[in-house]
Image 1 (cartoon, one colour):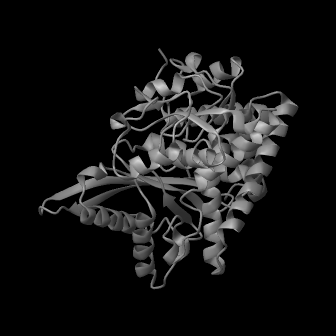
Image 2 (cartoon, rainbow, N blue to C red; image 1 turned 135 degrees about the horizontal axis):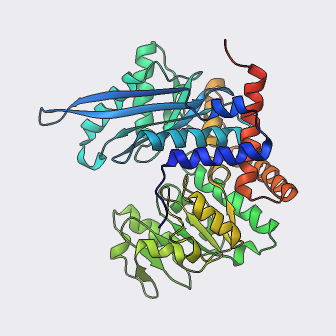
Length: 418
């Protein structure tokens, strides 16, 4: 049984592996192991019944050496410091890999939002914003939506920040509604990015993209988008899952119908369609396919199921879905893993585009956004693929070589203060 290690330990192990490959300066290596800032706040809320509940909130900044911190805010009962430190570090590598002038951060509140009314949720967000007010801003740290947060959450954060600053400041967050400075394409950006990456990678590996069979674990903000994009061009998605069950059909699922089903608030465990088998949600990962896309949460592929993974390409739609032990097994078995810091970076990329549009008060059309996203992502993929081939290492190691090198160079040029 695989030894349970925290996400932060996983992130540190990945950093250590990259440091060896690039002979990283020990002083820079030491600096990169730690967060620049960690803020833990109490978020007291008067509930609808008049009682007071206090929730725990966090904002973590790993590195701002290349620019303002960038990273989502998640609301979940599972939010904890070790998770947020890892996610903040991964954001540093994502922005550096894409050569964006941003750093890495993450935030969240430990809460089950299903137990909150709409009013309580708004008050929670607004009070949390006040507590982290001194850490965030267009030149400091720019939050975005994440698990269980959305454009409305960002609108509340922007409003609180703007009220305290005395001026409307759309650049304080990304992922906002279009009407107050949000960008077209932001909601679908992570899924679109996955689509651009897998299409190019399939071509590089000599596969016929449209003939590949796909399984997508998760049908949320990321999984449903990549599923829809693949389905629209004629690809066959033979399996997917939600939090209740998995759906499997060797002849292919009707993704358009599944999207309608989910929009009505239904669960996959209740789905009935001829030729579609309802299976345990965990089982979807080990079904035979060409491309497996884990798009839920971390630590889904471990040493306990890695030997049962039956695909040619594993495209990481979630952050940290594969443990280091599993990664080693997959590499030994010849399964090509396209790592999270490259594969799912479309979201942070379009967040950057939104930030640029806000600063310039000039907004792009969707065609330009998708063209710019495709160009940046495919350049990053080309760079990673080249390093992997040149050094005979995995795509993950190659991505880390480039990302850590970019951050290290920035630290070297700026030096250590004082």
